[in-house]
Structure formats: structure tokens, C-alpha cells
Amino acid sequence: MAGGNQTSIFEFLLWGLSERPEQQRFLFLLFLWMYVVTVVGNLLIVLAIGTDARLHTPMYFFLASLSCADILFTSTTVPKALVNIQIQSRSISYTGCLVQLYFFLTFGDMDIFLLATMAYDRYVAICHPLHYKMVMSCRRCTFLVTACWILTSLVAMTHTFLIFRLSFCSKKIIPDFFCDLGPLMKVSCSDTQVNELVLLFLGGAVILIPFVLILVSYIYIVSAILRVPSAQGRRKAFSTCGSHLAVVALFFGTVIRAYLCPSSSSSNSIEEDTAAAVMYTVVTPLLNPFIYSLRNKDMKCALVRFLRGKVFLSWGQ
Image (cartoon, rainbow, N blue to C red; front, side, top):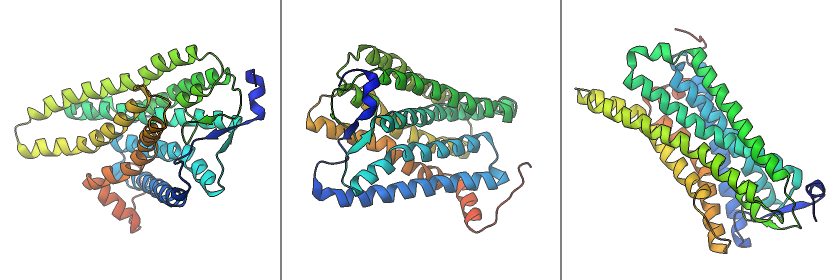
């Protein structure tokens, strides 16, 4: 089938989570459990922060935004994979594939930008504490999150439009359990050179620039913490950054492996790419609520108050 205007009448086939039929039931139950825990955990964080005035600070505002993005990010891929396992199908329509691609890129890039924004927030809080309230004002925080949403939408639209221009010859199997840029380009029968260049430069910039900004922020943060005279003060400062650093290491490590490290088309390579994709699309959003709540005393207290019904509905103190 030739021509991008004809591709809408056929379906793609997804590689899925495993080629082995005997593993399907186990994978369905495992991913269903992870999805439910991810949604419930992140939703609890959003509700606890929203209903407790003690947490109405920039750090927790960004954390609530990250939890919302994680819920949407996981919901873009996992439900479709679960449905396909349950009905023993691999199909996804051309339109559904492009819609999934757009939202996957939007919410995935949103995670990246929010992690960079949270690093900047910690940099200002620790390196410039006297100016923190002025720099990280409510208006500034709202602007930063809004800018993240706009930028991620523009990046996702650019990649999706370039995929829309490609032709796909037949029901080829997309070597992943959802529609992503690299796997889609592999099954295209068009020239994908432009797509590959845009993915290399624009996609690389979206990943590496925030990653570098996070590293620079933490170089300054660690330098400032080491100058703190009291050991208790240093421990407190490190504890506020430890959760964020753990999430950054887990998320960026798997994302860089998936997008910036070349892979072959062999079966083993597809399984490795799928495992890396599962890490940043499912495992990281699953672990975020545990990482932030278990390492954060204020967050744990807010969750306990919320679950007991002792919430504070006032938005200011």
C-alpha cells in the first residue's frame, strides 16, 4: 500500500509484551496490577497535596503535576496492551496508532521537562533560599508548568505529523507493545531520513538538554550542601533531593537506552528494547509514589491525614 492517505484503512500489528502464549495470563495480571497501583498511588499524591495546605509549595505543586503526567503517560500505553492480551489480538488501527503516539510523546516529554523543573526548584531553594519565595512565586510556577505543556505538545505534533507523511506497505509488526517513533520508522516503506534526523536532533535535545540542566543544578546543589556547617542540615538538604535524584536516574537511564542507543532488528534486541520501554513507561510511574512518599516525612503525614479524612481545605497559610 503506497501513499500516506491510504494507510488509514488498515491496522498495524504490535509485537506485544511477549511472544510466548504461556506467559500471556501472567503478564496480563502483572501489568494490570502495576497499572492499578500506578494510578491509585499517583492519584493519592495529587489528592493529598491538593487537600493539605501545608503542602501548597512549589516543590509539591511540581510533584502533583508529575503525578498527573505519570497517570496519563501510563494510561496511554498499558490499557491497550491489556486489551490486546485479553482478546488475544495484536491489532491497532492506523488512526489509533497515531493518536497513541501523540499522547505518548506529550506525556513522556512532560515527565522529562517536569523533572528538570523540579531540579531548578531545588537549586533555588538550596542555593538561593532568601530569594526562593520571590523567584518561585505562584505565577512563576504556573508559567513553568504551562510552558512545559505547550512545548511537549509542539514536539509531539512535529513528530506525529512527520510519521503521518510516511507510507506503510502492509500489516507489518511494530516491534514494541505500543506505537513509538523508532518502531514505526522501522516498518515504513518510505524514506525515513527526515524523520530520523528530526528524532536525532529534536528528540536528542528534548532528552539531553533537560538532563544536562539537571546535572548542572545538582552540581551547584551538592556544592552548596557541602558548605553547610551542621551535619543535620546537610542530611536534611540531601533528603529533599534524594527522591528526585532516584527518579531521574531510573527514568533517564532507560529513556537514553531506548532512544539514543542504536539497536538491531533481531529478536533479542526487540526484547531488550521492550524491557527498556517497560521500565520508563510502567515501572518508573509505578515507583514514583513510593519513592516520594517513603523518603518524605511531610508527604507521608499528608497521605495519612488524607486517608484518615483529616484534610486541610484552606489554600493559604
